[in-house]
Figure 1: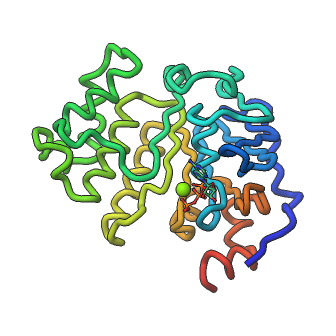
Figure 2: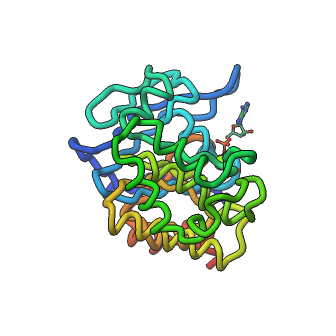
Length: 251
Ligand SMILES: Nc1ncnc2c1ncn2[C@@H]1O[C@H](COP(=O)(O)OP(=O)(O)OP(=O)(O)O)[C@@H](O)[C@H]1O
Ligand SMILES: [Mg+2]
């Protein structure tokens, strides 16, 4: 179902945004996927990126985190131009990407996986970071010595998110944290994301297929279609929008 027209009242022009993406274009080989994306995330906000399969959500995340090179446009994070930076330098600034599909190290234990996350920024408070993750996901604490590859799907997703949290991010990009999980486990993941936001004031850019839950928890959202922002607004604006209700909320 086609969504058109960007809502004019939706334009969030925040000059002191933690993340500001302007006119961003990116793609693979000869194929351009993102066609001029404008998006911003204010400090301590949760911003949702919605859109159907293939809309370009993961491509957007990859470009912001430096895994994929921007072809045009700018990306500023904490007042640093990062569109030409390497992924490792972007992580060091505190912009941490938890990609789709639970990229954990299966032959390492839960604790070792988390230590890798905590180690990345060479922070002195590594122990505190691990305790923080165990506080959010007690299941990981119980299973800290288990090989990560033998965790259940939901536990592996907790570990992937936990590794992001362990690096004390300023901005966490989460790509479909609920993918492939049973509703009860997905709810648990959403609750822990909400807790992380509430208690640690971590800024979040959240890509989700579970639009109802994502809209519920976000301050602001963007709807992508074929690599363009076709709609944006506060969660109230988006949940009230007929096109969002029809296309994404099944109403
Ligand atoms: N490495 C790649 N090489 C070529 N094309 C790619 C590559 N990765 C993604 N694409 C294409 O880019 C388009 C956008 O993909 P992307 O993964 O960004 O979509 P998405 O919105 O995250 O979708 P989903 O909800 O299914 O995860 C798709 O048409 C996809 O086939
Ligand atoms: Mg994706």
